[in-house]
Image (cartoon, rainbow, N blue to C red; front, side, top):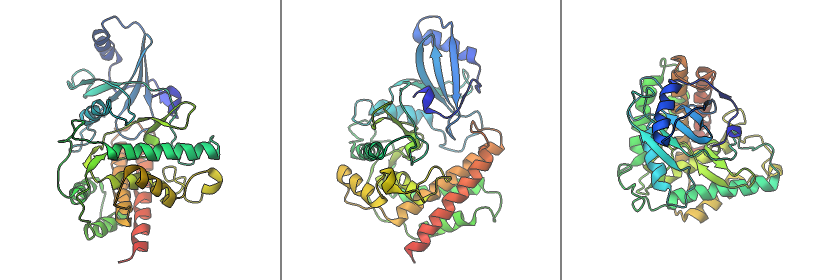
Length: 351
């Protein structure tokens, strides 16, 4: 990752920098005289730091220093999947080292390659020409197809997730999380409606692939000057699952406004050089070789997951355990926005 890829940075850390200095001296096999740490403020989950040790650069990802929900912030899984993908055509940063012992920095952590490139938090990708946007969207779409085409068993990820109905398990798990996060019965009724709607419409599909879990434009690192993905980031939610979940997450932007996590509703897509959703999906189907098509169930499911995830961000903010400024307010806003958009899709879909 690059310093200019994140909107804001700070020198504050949630661990003792001297502990990291001592570790890096052993890891690099030399004293570390100058240690520069910068904490990114662009994410809403695992704390991420740019590390410069006498010119040796890396990115450090760790768990937040708080009580964690079961299976949350699974940086060991992030590290494992990055290592597994290193020899494939899926672009990822090189994974350097995973440190399980929490006594050093307060939580487990890992180090990975610092890529030089650009990260866009808005799907409108300000600053690009229409031709550049068209090329960038094609690369993002084709990269997603590479993830789903991957022979995950040959990559050593055959046990990376469970067999069986992915959607039923996920609805149950994320509904349990919502029960933990909610304030009262009046908190986000659209989210409750989504859960009921989804539970009655679980599809019967055995399609299984490696899934990123949060395949948004903000989790892509693009080349500094070329319109191509050089790194897929933030694999915290990755697992073996249904590939159309990634597709639904990636196309949420076509159903959300710019102030709702950088969506595209209300934008002039033709003038911007951005394909409409149908054209974008057709491009994915061709490159992924997918016989199944995205449905409103997948779209609502992605909004459901986004809503619960945002509610979790709000809770962490309220507890003072978030690196994102104003995360309590932002999380609550996004939780309701995702739920509202999800029910709009559900209602248009009919009974």
